Image 1 (cartoon, rainbow, N blue to C red):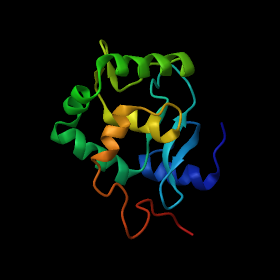
Image 2: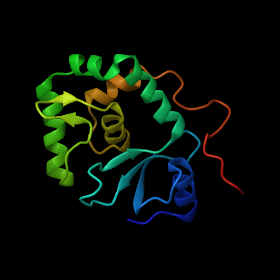
Image 3: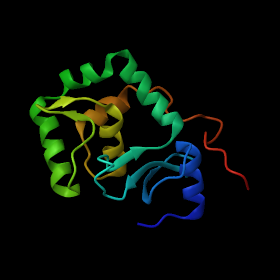
Image 4: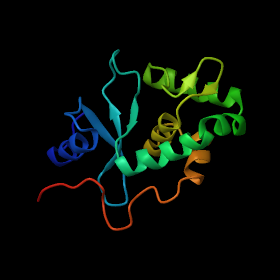
Length: 146
């Protein structure tokens, strides 16, 4: 996986640290990385990661108002387990957003997987329907020089 120096700079700014190797899996409306796919390794169980701070905060607002529980009630445990099983089979790791037994634990993980196009899923669809203005209207929230 290789990333451009501009993408690497954007992701470093978004995360507040130097990222490990990644590929851009989805971009925001302004062309900046919004989701990355991490290089597979044992210390990082999450294959896909929301990096856009505006999108991250929008998802966190849904989680903070009971969204994890509500999404879990809206989507069957067997569906959640199916997403988890498909992720494990394709990427060799668990979905960080799933608890054993098919319980949703993190809306960010499901949304990142969905936005990347890797595994479209109803948990992310449920989440995305509830996001109010996930991206700033005036421009990208990741300010880069030049």
